[in-house]
Image (cartoon, rainbow, N blue to C red; front, side, top):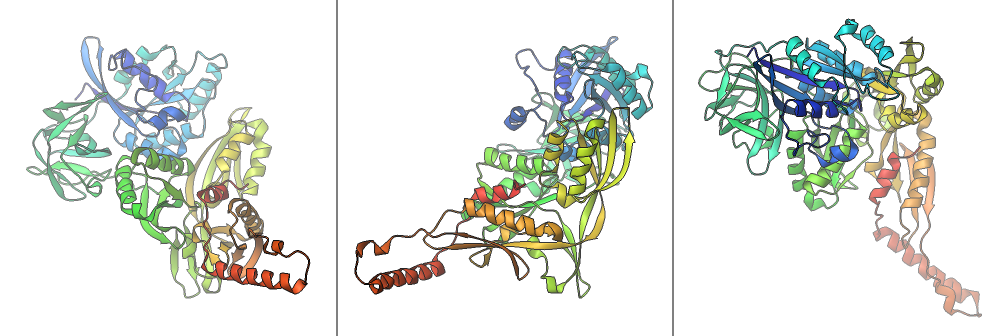
Length: 595
C-alpha cells in the first residue's frame, strides 16, 4: 500500500487537464505511441467534438522512481460548472489533487470552487502552472495569484506544458513525494466505495470502486449495503486503458467489478461493497446526493416509445449519476419524464446522448427551477412543473431559489456585468479586487433568471474572460405568476412558465409573436394567447388558408356571393371544432432562445 498514490486533476474549463493527462500516460508508458491520440481518456464522440470532458475517467499507471515501483491511480475530471458532481465523486476516491492553472488566463471561478471541494476532503494540493510555452503566458503574475490563493511557497508551484511535455517528469516525482499513500487496513473486512458505473450490453453493469479496507477476490460473494443485494464477483480487475482482470484487488487500490447485474436500480453511486462472509460494521459516510438546478420535461416524439425511453434513461443514469427523473404526463405531449439537471449544458448533453447512444428522438420542454408555493389554507407545495402551481385565487405566496454567484473578470468589464446582473434581478453583495486588473463580484441572483442564457450573455459581453460559479443559498418570497400559452383557447402545458410579474407582459408578447411565425397555417384561424390566470395579456392570430369560393360568380347578384361565403364560413367553424393545432418542436426550442 505504501507505493500506491491516488490523485485527480482539477481545474477550470479549458486549462489543459486532458492534455496533461495524455502526457502523464505517455511518460509512464501506459499508452503506446500507436494508441496515443489527443484526449486519450475522453472516449465519447461528443467529448471530442466539443473539446470538453463530460465524464471523469479513472486509469492506472505504473511508475518507477529510484528503483522502486509505484502504482498511480489518476482520475481526469471535467472543468465545467455543470459537471461539478463528477468532480466531487472523483475527489471522494483520492488523497491528492493536481490543481492546474492556465499561465495565460490565471485563476478563474471554477478553479476556486474545485479547490474548496478538494480542501473539504483534506486532499494534498499540488499547484501546477500549465501552458508556460504560450506567448501570452504571465507565469510570474499567475504564480503570485496561486500563492495568495493557497498560501503555499513559490517553490512548491510546478511549471509545465501539456503541449510540449515540459515539466511532466517533475510532476510525477512531486506526486510520489507529496501525495500521501492510502490509509486502510488490508486485514479488515472488505469496505469499498462505488464512485462510478457504466452499462455494458453484453456483461451487464460494471461498477468502479475504491477499496478502503480489506481486499476483494475473484469469485467471492459480495453485498451492496444500500440495496442489500448479494452477488458473485464474476470478474474483478484494475482500470488500464482497457479493463485488466486480476485475481484480487487490495486496500488502497481502484478497480472494477462485473457481477451480472442487469437492472440499473441495483447500483447506486456512493454505495458500499462488502463481503458476505465477513461484512464490515458500517457503510462509508459523507457522500451527498445530487441537487438538480434545472428541471425540464423530456418526451418521446412517438408516444409508443415511452417504455424504450424509460430504459434508455435508466442506462444513462448509471453513467451519469447527477441525472434525476420521474414520470409525468402532459396534455399536449402525452407521457414523458420530468428530469433534473445541473445546468443548461448538462441538459443539452443528456439530450444529445439520448439521440446518439440510444437512437431516441425526444422533445424537451421549457426548462425551469423548483419553487415553493404556499396556499391560503397553509399548505406548502414544492412545484417543479409550472402547471402544478395552484390558481391565483388559492395562492398565498411563492418562494423561489436564490444563488450566491461569484464572477471573476477583468476590471474593464465590471460595468456591463453589473448591468446584466441587475437586469436579472441580482443584488450586488461584494466587490473585491484580486489584482489591479482582476475583480471578483459577488451577487445574489434568482436561479430562475440564470437558467436560460445568462452564462452565454456573460461570456459574450466580457469577450470570454468572465468566469462564473454559484452555490444555492436559500428560498425567498417573490412576485411570481404563471404565464400560460393558449391555442384556440386550449392551454399548451408544455409552454407554461413561472415568471416574475414585471417581466410577464413583455415575455407573453414575445412568445405569441414567435409562435405566430412558427405554427404552420391551417384551414382555420388559430388564436395564440398569453394568459395570467383568467386574464389574457397578449394575442396573435395565424390567419386561415382560404380558397376563393366566389371565383365562379362573375357579375350577378351580391346575394349569390354572400350565400357561398356563408357556406364557407360554416365549414370553417366546423373545421375549427374538430381540427387540432400541432406545435412543431422548433417552437419549443425557439421559446428558449427568446431574448
